Length: 220
Image (cartoon, rainbow, N blue to C red; front, top):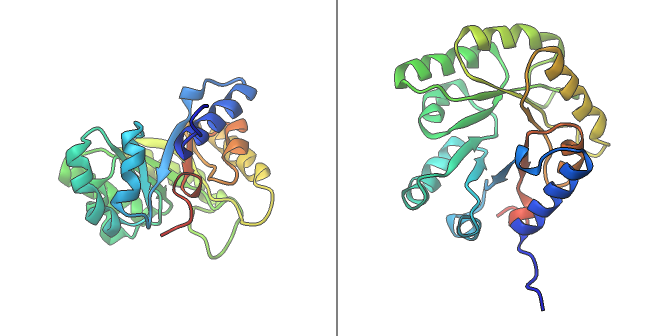
């Protein structure tokens, strides 16, 4: 009898299937395993299976959890996917290999200053408030060209665009809009899609999918 697939194997299979349907190479899609609120013990099985790209929501949580894990697995790549306060910019630049929620000019300034100080250029996704939701972070669509120009002039490596669509409604139109905004602004990376909709995101061009509950179960 075949062994049942692990959650990681199952998610990777779903990514490969969606990519194949879309006529894309599965290896062109980066799986960012979102480990927020989950303890180090929950991460170890994924590390043992070869997953090396992880995401955290908060700088403080990552600082507590990852130094020891990275000692054992120095090839881990760590993404910050949650909102970032400007006063935490230096901590984020020191710890993370990619930042997904650059959404305002003040944060561009703080990150550029931190990168200059630490001698480290960390790629950043610009988060777009794709559903124009007041309670969500993200750059308003109308302000996106100006913010991208600031990012580029600050010599911050631009990884692409990121979004979190409104909850409870079909995500596909929002993913399609983000892909159009990226194309219109000469940006290639697309961080979009989570556990419930990453296949749709892949069909619409996602290069990075942020998957948590499908890998770890309910939040700790």
